[in-house]
Image (cartoon, rainbow, N blue to C red; front, side, top):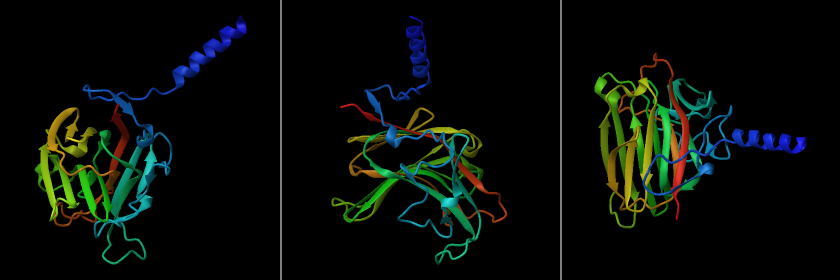
Length: 261
């Protein structure tokens, strides 16, 4: 009897220690948590079974070079760093700044994607987006692009959301649709929760639980990779002052759900 009680209590203990899967915050419909596409960043290094610590097909937006050394995991967060740095033997056109990129190894199609994040306090961007390039199909969904530090204070509160069609059998020329949402406070001062609901009919953007954009899904039916990065945008955000301190784009978690059939 004592042994039974001991093992029963032990099983209860281990059951309590098992981390419960997060529930989808969207109330409409039934959702299944996709652990292989999600990450809580609780270790000390990036999980390379899920992520590339760079973009294998792109070196970065010039002059900022994607450096894998600028990707780290610390205190339960993935951190992408951008800084003033000249690395030796950089490809032509890359200089002065190194930035960072993380790309999923998995291709994803439809679902609800949510991250908790804090943009970097820098003129280098903080971005969360999806894309894939095939010979006859190239589409992109940008959940957000943010400039955390800018001489014009209004820019620091702008949350840019864009979809692109670069190649598609039904589209003759490149096209994009962009909207922005102005936040009540400076984006780089705090953490935010960004969500993207993507299905066969619509694409929806959420910020801190509020629905802020809805787009008819006419072309975005291609499996895409998930991406986080920081880029230099000389003609959009302008370049950082080389004397500025390093910027840090922090991601607390990535959580993904798919609708149950």
